[in-house]
Length: 481
Image 1 (cartoon, helix red, strand yellow):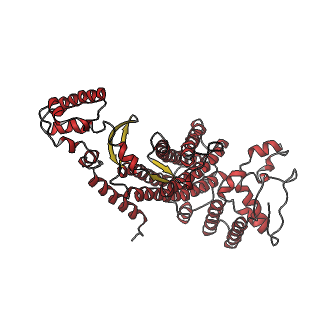
Image 2 (cartoon, rainbow, N blue to C red):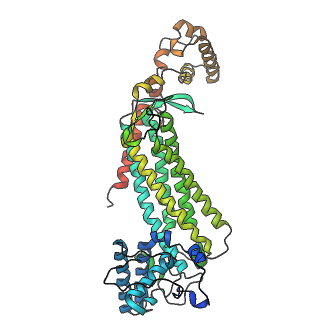
Image 3 (cartoon, rainbow, N blue to C red):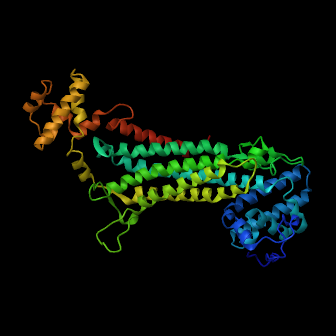
């Protein structure tokens, strides 16, 4: 550890140091086991939340008369000094501290003496760590939701420029029907909207306080759990001590939501990778978001979407890991739960990094090749359904019309023609209801414009959807009344 010159120097941990729990034991922990047991190398991420939770706890201890106000004030200020030391890089506990909670308490006792030992009155490390994790996750959920909004805004901004741009729509990765590119992009907006909503719902269950539940059975001290719940901004408190100290449902739910975010980002990534290939040629990658090959100078690699696609499996793995940790645990706390943190922390970091990178990719890294898109939607049979719809609108039963068009497509394929290449005479030989307006009906732009049902790709619908999307984003960021 490193400390300021005004602070008392720490005692280096060695075989004579006694951990806070060690008076029960007659010999020191094997150094390898001590290192294996420690979590300080990753749970240091919780330090600010640990300090905040401890400050609320000690204030409550004074308010309820469990410790004198003067002691609470000294502890509170000592904790605040540790916060400043950490922020200045002066407090960096090592492996000997075991975990962040012991590290903070040990440093507090160094700073203010014996009174620091009163901090842990009326709580256990079990409810303490549960509180820290919930405060951490609540904080980061707000940040991830903000990043989701940024991602949505990036999609809306680029979609605004491409309402009239057409792109082949696919099913089974086979060309199906042309759609507005804006409509395609807004599909990902809707996925992100569900992600944003889902995280908000999960946060209600994250934001529940276990502080004061003790190791598993509560405490005999007359604590006021509602006071710490209110001071820390929790919306509720656990009603059962066994459940509260051992619950990690909220973490699993978060990783479920994080996995879905990654699914959506990975699906978009896969499309960008395909679109950027020579075979598709729908987008060009700008230099700011692509790299080259070490031996093939002509290449531009879609690193961002490939990394996002790869990192999705990382988050899925964290979800599976935590599910497996939890599935066999008897009540209440078990050391297995130490494994929740690395999965959770990395899940948070990965999702945040991927959302930020994808936002930049969409805003700065993609250039849609509109000429290629225009050609692509005119060189296939994706307007075949519209021929069937044309006949159905003139009274021909749809299934009959469907079969007629199937035969037409078969004939065109054998002759190397597209539907637009048929003469009017050839159309009318297929069915007398065909007239000269068939040519306008099967142009890609008309095919798209005609699908004007609510939620469809018709240009009017897409423009309305864009307006609604922007309104939804504005309502999220508008100041509350």
